[in-house]
Image 1 (cartoon, rainbow, N blue to C red):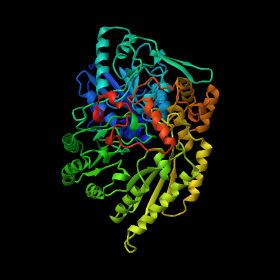
Image 2: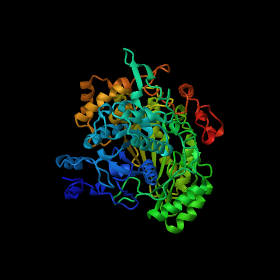
Image 3: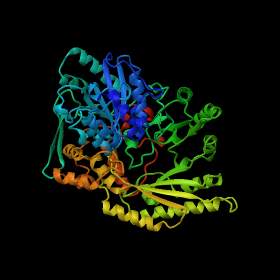
Length: 611
């Protein structure tokens, strides 16, 4: 059966719109006549992948080049995969419906560790050899995104890694590919050539040696062209860098079905659990003029009725009041709503919320992260209970009666008192509502408390800390559930077994490659989905491969230990991370770096506020 014949069984699968392409805003270019063909692969379903801003940017950027094309590829859901395997249909792109094996570069974005088995499954569906050493011809497989800063568990399967922001580095790789392709040189010559590009990491050009106890003895490069420490790339001028003026409008509902308008990258807050706050340093803002110009074009070109401002902390934008005032002039007349996610409790503005929700009123979401002030200081969250109650009072007094509060369980230095403090804080929020709203006007309040399990991530001050054991997390979840008794409070929690696997692969090394290979052989896929995640199967995989997952997830590291990602440079020094971990032990806070440099080391990158 040909790929073009998929419509014969589309009505037999869930959400057939995932597989048809042809959406408004998509780009279809002549396939055979284009020198460089890029398959942008998202290792999850269409509706999740189509919500990813990085794909939107790079897809349109590459397609503006006359010598290149970029087509989208998503992981087919279980029912569609069965049909494809039954009918010998390979994994295909949405635009030209071409087999992924026909592309030159196959790029996966690594957003979440629990998608790693999907990468192997997608390569298998595409009939592309899983192991990089077995690819003597055909496409090159590369990865990028936040998880690529420790891509070691995938080292056996990928040809190269793009570290950092992709707008410049992807163009340089395409230029190098076209030059190499026309030269007729061997496959190895291309990898040697791009290894010289700043931000490119070729795993096989680095040898890893281990001690008998399983810790790493050394990581050394084995070729002159490779950098001693590959350093991430950043975009220094956010106002001039490429950003799409149109976006693909799906036929089916996706997770974030709206215009996504990026206003800045990076964060100055320094939360010690947050990997994004480190790896996206330094802060670099788009100008208000650029943001407004993009908003007008995106509204015109997509027809969406909502704009969501994208950043790690929207209310930290330095010209927030001017930007929102000008955006509201553009959006309100067109009945387009303006969404400001990532607002912080300590700079919450009721006036701003009233303005932006004039078109559509939504609930409020805040992330105190910890239930006590001591633990919030440990993680350097930078907010107080007074900040939260002040914001709640403002919101409730102005008509809101629903709020979501996000917390983490299992944080370093946590006690049971900190966990139960989550319930006490939620109680105070309920009390705040009834204190703020006159008895005759209150409609009742809904407070949703959600807890996730802390995962120690690379390049954070907590990268040396063990993850809490599963039994301990479950015990804390149970204690918190019992503590919450008021009917106005709903408690949701994240599955701790999934977080355990996430920690294993977040902090893993190359020896986990055989685990992933065996997991793929045993049918593991969509491990971030409750209906397909099989913890017992994973434990069997670890047993069969002789790998102890607790070695990666639950072991405390010494500051002196070489970590699997120690040879990667994100511009933030180990000395800074160690200082921050030591301050956490004493619940000492570090001020926002907008108020003075904290010496993280990001000045070496030469961009943004660190220039």
